[in-house]
Image 1 (tube, rainbow, N blue to C red):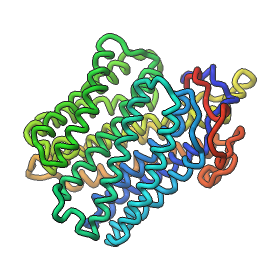
Image 2: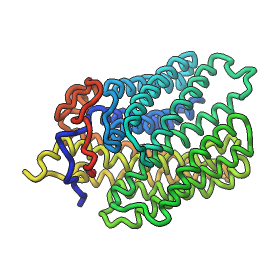
Image 3: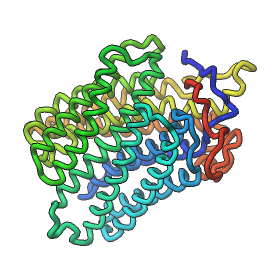
Image 4: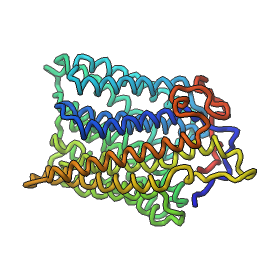
Length: 464
């Protein structure tokens, strides 16, 4: 049985349509990324797949989550709802054009698509940055989010330069090679923007939903991560940009050490909890284990050669483990609570105490959640193992097993997306198309309103 928030102030709710729109679009990009990975054979497919997965599914989810919860956690108002709407469609249009251009070899369109993406991400950075600027002092989660916004600014500039470089000799006679810019862009995207956001959110979510607190060694590990991780990310990125092995090696060690710190903190909170195990916590457990495995594999690889092209995402072959095992399962777990929570607040919170209402974890289907969990754990596990074996020059990696694992990931992704969409269909105050196109969505949420007021934020004392 899940815990129902008993002190949510339902008269001061956050806008529902804006974050849900982000989450629905992000789910679409998740499915598109898995399909692109499994069923296309174009030379540019890996690049399209990674961007659909990271920029589409993960980053758009981050945009929606920050837009929703920064005002809640910070006790302030969202700077602008109009900008929150604009950021989504700019990134969506740009990413769709970017992936389509890669898959159809229309490289001349990449700079325009990249420009839309940059405009969307910079709109997001400005909107959330202005919102964070009104919160003082910043807590550990807010500090991580502020750093992530800075990474977004730099990585998108590098990304646009790489898009332009497809059609113009932008890096000819440049002090840095195109390959070094690619590695730096990937470093700032994955280890900068994405993992910094994930770590910041986990400090809130892992304690909140396990009903535990940081204590003992947790505080020391958090201090090490909060100092060492941003220094490590910058050192690793700059070292890769200018080909400085020593600087990149120091940065890589700091990054790996910080990931271990977060893995230990998360594992400790999961073992200390006395609450009922939920889909959110089970997926966080997978992420904690994947962090530890990734770190143990990556440390010797980065100490040996942090500039190696096949070690951009960690140890050679560790990309699937990092992107799906760590980042993916944190996002899977978080959305299994966040989407039902937002719907519950708008649909049922004001009825609490007056009539029987479902609990938050009653809104999704437990059977579908079990199916997608098993499919994703097995599928991602086999794909990660196959990648590591291939990187180690194993004699043979069974193609049938890899294909079957890819099919399981697709089935799990579809089941996950279906489960969350069913929450909106069965319990949402409006239809799914209405959520996507905007309009009024429950309790006075006018999607086109600019700025915000006290009615746009959840009571800071409300515990999901």
